[in-house]
Length: 311
Length: 311
Image (cartoon, rainbow over all chains, first blue to last red; front, side, top):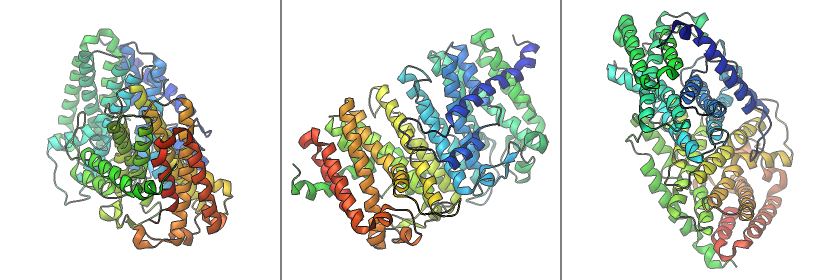
């Protein structure tokens, strides 16, 4: 069972994987062109580094690496797959921050890419990061079996695309009343929006670890339930932070979503209701990884961390 | 050797593949979510269909399909890979047309996506199309060997990303004086810009056919030289059309590039010099596919078509 020391040690474990991902991203975002590349424009790689380095908890790669370790998949490949996944997350932040989208000036306490550079560069940074994600996921360093890599590419695309993250951002803009008169969303509609916008990529992180470890179908199903629960918990905690957090800790404007009347489960359930839901989700995450015994202690601690995080 | 009938029949062959690609894209851009997708927002799929259907010569998929046929690769897989490639091309047009980029209102005689819908939707359409391209390229329908599919994913990402198409668009914006005072580019700088912006994807189209056909290294090298030549010819012909074409035939504004002093080889070499270069490139394309004999007649006709096209 999960010990207090597991929870106390969790932030250090997370920071340690984050440092490994950071080092790997630095290598991947070099100015020198690679095989079959013609040249890498300096301003573009500088803006890409601004978008992808020195920031973020790297939670998605962490979940991927820790899930892979349950199945004894080699760590180097899991880190490479985690870096690919993080590139998708970084691209989504750059495009979501654009003036035509959420119009944010600040991200992780620094100017957003279109503020630090310009809008055209920011669009291309997002495009380049998304493309690079698939480049990296296709590399033999991820796994020596091409069937494993193609499964990861396929699932990453499904989680990120029009039926996943991109579609979720579209639903979020619609919920703001961008395209039609604004209306109050039902709880189930909010759940769908969030399962797509943030849930799909977090769920992929967990599934990817199991795929890398060539798990059987039953183990993959357990990991999938865990990923689903932690993905939901992540979004509810994020929405609670927006209501209760402070801008300095978050590195971005607090209360912005609440002020704009954004569709969140906190608005639908109330703060106490949202906290109760978080407890249920942590219990569901625990249950889902029960078959893995002590090997899943880090995933259990991650569920608690995600539900209780303050930044 | 190439007969006049091959050249006369070429437009019909091109149109026939285009119709097959169109039908396939229609299937891929359905509203119904697929396995592992949660839902596909209706406004997003409508805007994606606006971007990807009813337009374009489908030259890139055509080159892929015809190259694959030289190596006797199954046609159905080549069409699927061609559809994936065309999705990348379509995404690049949507993002290039954005107000922050080239700010175009018209594309293929119809309003651009951000005009027909809105800017946020257009950004997401591009993101979704790019992501879907990798989803499709990873599917078993492309080829039953995952090693072939992962090679295609990898090369598509390299051709499209920061060292290829996206980087080329960045260089094009820089050449317009967007980031620094404008200066005259050397011929070699223009060649690099174009090899990245349009050349890389056309070259990939040809290489992809050879990869699908599991060609040997020497045959792949020949196809690569062909793709390189036809990619350059395509861009020079495009720039000549901009100088000499008429807006009604093109379905977009003519003379816009020349008026803005855009870096083109036509500006660097003059119209006669550009025409002479086109003849050299067609000869180089012919030479590159010489080892394939009559099997490559369609590729030879394609090189002539690309060099001589009027729309």
